[in-house]
Length: 126
Image 1 (cartoon, helix red, strand yellow):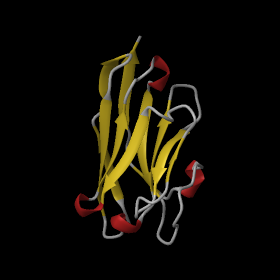
Image 2 (cartoon, rainbow, N blue to C red):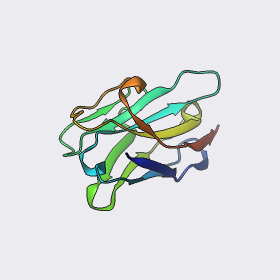
Image 3 (cartoon, one colour):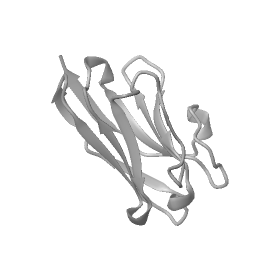
Image 4 (cartoon, rainbow, N blue to C red):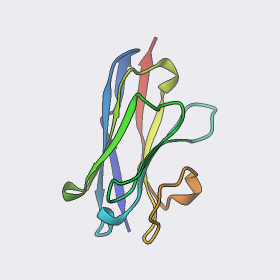
């Protein structure tokens, strides 16, 4: 089992930056593929970024490429999402997610992630 708690959301002006954190507990964190998703009101949950446990593969959703950076600190059981050049359309609830054990690659489908945090709200004012 992996428990996930996000933090770092808030209100920011367009063009600004935020860094989200996801603190994980559970003995398998360092081996889990981790991902960030987001969901805006009335929209489907969308893949944002994912990272393997060795950090040798990182995948981004098209809408955030070049602006967001995912990273992880396995020693401290934390994954981060650095968000720069924020746009109004980035407004959403952001969720941290973990794939189950023995799932070694980044997946972009929410169905491939077994564990989820409660989400943190990011609001970008235009």
